[in-house]
Image (tube, rainbow, N blue to C red; front, side, top):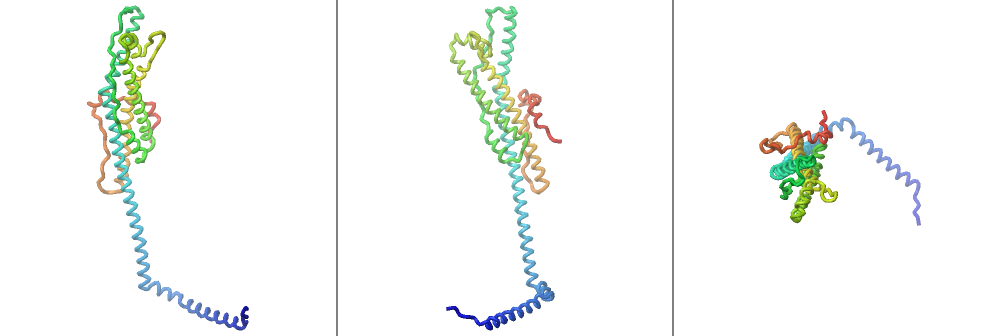
Length: 306
């Protein structure tokens, strides 16, 4: 059964509620008068509370700024250290290539191409009748193998690509240098393989075919093999490529590092390590450094912005 509600009871109940609400609103309006609000805002409690909140906010902002500055300083330091490491690695590549040329490939290639030019002159004189066909061309084939130097190209590539904020030519230099090193390793392996095959020739075959195979001349019934000639040409050019591109990378990384160091010194105080300066002595590099003109076409693709 549902209990019936007397209308009079409802009206009285509502009336009582309205009366209490009106009284509460009256006191509330009196309480929030300008005088009371002013008194509250000027109270010691409110002043302390506002001061504490302001101090906490200022402290948080200061702490955040200190954290951001410390992070920025650490990033500068990491960039400088990684740049120095990359300069050192690129110099190691350059130094290894210079040593390879000085100790192995320069004399080997110079002698080879000098003898090839002598052979061309000898054959022209024989064709002109100045030299008897019975006189052989005298030469000594250099059948020494050439070792490929161990170089830290993988570590260098990882540093430049992943740790340094460089763009443009330095990135291209790393890719070009890695390609030149890969081709040089393949060329040296091919030459060593050809030398092994020359050594396996019989004395008769060596006397008949070796000069043609060695200098890329026709032999037999219209046969021509320029494989060894092409290998020697590549050995000469690729050794120069590795020297040039690794040395240029050293210079570009040094320029990048000094720019980073300049920004650091303009924003922070304190001593920080300097950028490595790579210098190759003229005595060590005499006749070994390829000229810039040899790479003018490659360099033209990276004009400096003015």
